Length: 147
Length: 201
Image (spheres, rainbow over the protein chains, first blue to last red):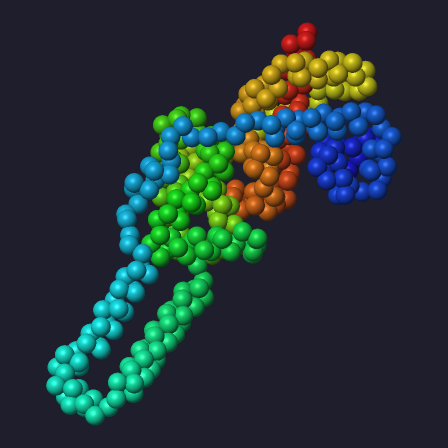
């Protein structure tokens, strides 16, 4: 910091109070012995302390509610996405079953219940993993977007 | 500037949720930043009705522009920047502040003491300050500073923001922020001592 007649400037004194490490060696040594500068630094220290004690202002109205009342309500896209996927899944699975139910009955007439269950469970699990995988890809793409 | 802070993860979550349609996340953003916005609005806007309008305007702007937030600063700093710019646009529109009055040099070079012979006077002035409701007096003197100077003092000392963050909010280089802060504090200190030297006489 610049020194004027061996004493620190106001900037130097403020820097001494805020962060002594930023002062040069000569200034630090001066502050160890100069009563005038020490006293002036104490003024600043007191000032800074008192500024920090000033109560924080606050609005005397409910800002959150007032702002939110002006923002259009939106449904979560997540809920819409899951709903549409569910409807799609039911249509994809339900439509062939509905139209070809008689053929399915004839097809599975000779197959045991155990084998049928295994086939059904396998199909369901494959569908579940595919849906989960698609959702993870969607989530990853959303996260990678540069806001 | 490219600050990734420890709060960036929660900022990202909040922004992502708001953009997905979660209004509760935006309520949380308002509650988290309301104090900082209040500090800026109270320092720059005097009329209570205008404060009400401007503070709402700040968050509506933040909501509309949230998809454009690039996370180059904290979310709170970005919203504070919107608050600062909104207040100054309002002041300029009302012609309540002019560029050459944004900061004042009055008293910047004024020295209350001229030498060691004023030592006893300074000590008595300090004692007066102690006695006379320090916070109230100080607040009054801060209010007399120019809009920019009192905003800088508030952001640094009351909100504990760094020079970088204050620079983002005010659009000033870090060095200028530091320089203006030094000046503002010097003016404030001198005004306080000058006032109470006069009272003493």
